[in-house]
Image 1 (cartoon, rainbow, N blue to C red):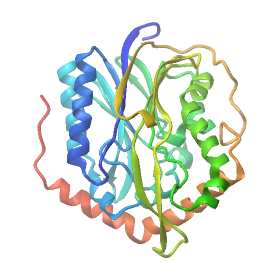
Image 2: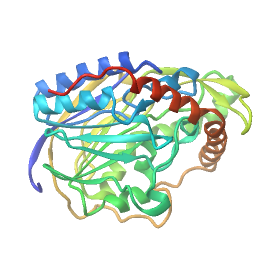
Image 3: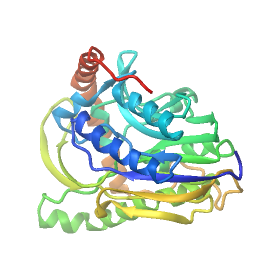
Image 4: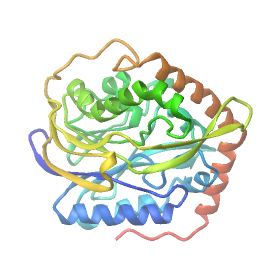
Length: 340
């Protein structure tokens, strides 16, 4: 509904890898807090049921298509008459996807599978259909009007703006954005220092730059905290090195012009940001570039992205897909709550 003002909230979450129960417990507490403070549109992070480092226990967080997290979204959306959105890793049709769920008060669930996994995320799931056949565009008609969804590096792709621009009055998004390793020694720290600073600025500025090209407000929810992951070195093997890092970026609410209305950096820890958002589209502040990425990514960052994509896809084909499907099958047999 163009011109409608909605109290919005975005959640900054510190989850536990592989522990859907603990992570969802923390998330539910934060959604309830936001709802009781008047929020009626709430963004939660990408991978809202478990962070996604490259660790074996993360396979246990893969959920079946109908699952406890969606049940919780439905229950809280109905109880507080709100719309809530976030992504989780789910198994469907013999594959695993990073599926965004936008849930309305009446129980309607809209879904979008992230177009391309980012780096080691490829170990756990495969991409959606947008870049294959143009379907699954993540633009939904809701009681609030047109709502678009996107996850993490979808925010810095021109294709995401193209699929949503002119069709949505708000974008609800989430990230799981990490930075360079801090345990590879002083020489590596010095060599990667400029890249770390660029990546930090890129992550914090992504919602603003996205809104400026979209012409609609953006809610952005982030993870926070430090973590350890395995960094796979080559396709076809499990040879890896330890990679200790932390999440970067900021949980933000941005208006259609790109003005930041509320923000909390990842290094400030878990919390919720709030703002009153005017829904609707306007003429974008900036034109859309004719290239794949919105920013001009440095060569080293593009190389890192491509190398980890190749390694991750190899792991998914050999191990990740089967492990995720097995975990989802076991969870499908567990009892679930009912909405109400």
